[in-house]
Image 1 (tube, rainbow, N blue to C red):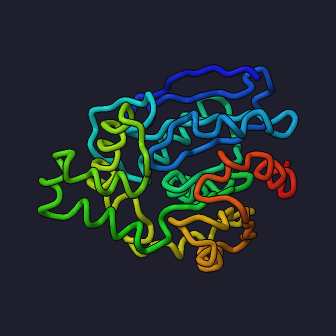
Image 2: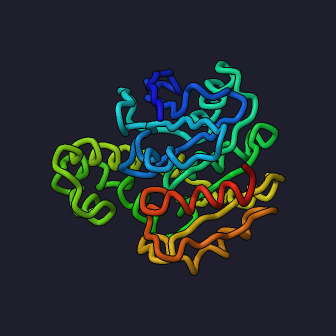
Length: 261
């Protein structure tokens, strides 16, 4: 399997993009957006199992991987517009999107703003719907927490809860990512802004994938998320936790084949 990496400015973030199977044609692109604490390499275990002919671009989101910026906050609409512009410059008129956890916030906004450019939407344990998740970001972005979380000691409990056993070498970057995501709230949340109802306007196919053993987003909550979309199918990977594309990549391939490719 061949891999290459390139960089592109997306909304002020010098963004790392990993291209899996660059030798394949560009007319079939699966755009991958990882969750909190991940990077463009989060989907690497899925790459060898991609359907024949499918090419995958995986993006390191703000404050993750090798993506760099001096910015301390992001806004869903402007980031999504910039992401769409980047794809247009590379002549990708239409993409399928596979997004996990935090990355699903961006994927949902992309489908909302660019329905004609979204072939299918695959959401794995998506963020932005489950109330406890936004409660945490709201808390981190509130006063006086904005001052307290400048210091790593106040963020460690949250980081350890979200990613147990995080390697020491990734702790600083992950802590910084959580800090800036908190400071970005509510600009990163359709739910907090009362705008989830807008997702009904996306006419394309949405596939909601949840892990049967996920402790962060219970599989039982999936039907509530599905109701925000006009054409949504729920798939449960029963033996998986929060990262089915890492632990069960072959099953994710089967779902891609089942619903589109």
